[in-house]
Image (cartoon, rainbow, N blue to C red; front, side, top):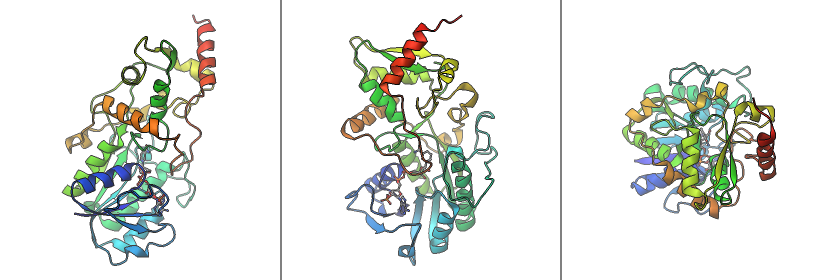
Amino acid sequence: MHLLVLGGTRFLGRHLADLALQRGHRVTLLHRGRSGSGLFPQAEHLIADRNADLSVLDGRRFDAVVDTSAYWPRQVREVAARLAGRVGHYQMVSTISVYADPDAGALTEDATLATLADPATETVSGETYGGLKVLCEQAAVDGFGAGRTLLPRPGLLVGPHDPTERFTWWVRRLLRAAPGSEVLAPGDPAGPVQFIDARDAAAWMLAQAESGRSGPFNLTGPATPLSMEAFLATARRVLAPADPPPRLCWVAEDFLLEQGVASWTELPLWLPRRSDGIHRTEIARALATGLQCRALEATLQDTAAWARAAPLSRAGEGPPRPPTGLAPEREAALLQAWHTTPRG
Ligand SMILES: NC(=O)c1ccc[n+]([C@@H]2O[C@H](COP(=O)([O-])OP(=O)(O)OC[C@H]3O[C@@H](n4cnc5c(N)ncnc54)[C@H](OP(=O)(O)O)[C@@H]3O)[C@@H](O)[C@H]2O)c1
């Protein structure tokens, strides 16, 4: 298969390109040449800014296109104007954030989609990101046809090369834990957490491109439910010193909220119970079409190996993100306050 990846040199797209090359596909990558310099010499590289000039695509044909770098519908329309009729299969990488009410219950692909007050907005923010991806999905279906368009909706993507320091923040936190020290563990130990190793997402996406499947698919993991307690206990076992291991100190969500701790950003992955809908996403459709999630231990070990060698990542593209993770002094102050606050 001749595969075009719009992107392909940073994280999800990078894993996808890597896998496609390993599987013997002919791969073309379109990017600006800013990320991953020197990657994939065996691929064709089209250097272009998709916001400025996509004429490098004129007259080209591809069996499949995976679009990892669209955030505005006009970007998808521009690709369709250049390639529609000459592409067998088009994947528009969307997001789990497309749903209007993530906390309404277990999120299936049929849940109501978000709408934007201003569909012409050019601002990508936490408020507009999901609604803009909905419009990108619609532009993909309009441009390439529903039968040729696959809409992967990933949850939190994790693993080596993640530019966002969310899952990786926990990896670094456990790696630097001193023997016997306390690590702040947020909220309800039994609360759910979902994320997917970007390599597993890429493998599923490539398989769908090979088979030409279409439609929307939630794409997160693991295959069986994971609690915050199981996640942190596994991370501690895999990453932290064993003699003696650090202690997980569970701090109640009401206390964290009273102290002004920002869920998801200051304590990555943690969401208060009333707004943890994106950790309750239904993934039966992806599992039934071959999604396989590797063991958490493997994701932790591989992320740690990469994080040890990688400097703290810059934020990725997409919605601007505040700095991720509790500073060590703030964590220590919160733990002290938790231990000294009388509780009834
Ligand atoms: N991270 C998550 O947890 C998460 C969750 C849900 C959905 N998603 C979605 O997953 C997708 C994956 O992003 P990724 O960063 O992992 O993909 P990626 O393909 O690994 O990296 C982004 C690529 O796009 C290229 N690019 C960026 N702007 C461009 C432009 N104006 N013109 C041409 N090329 C451009 C970058 O190269 P250059 O910089 O060299 O141009 C890079 O190759 C995104 O659509 C995101 O919305 C991510």
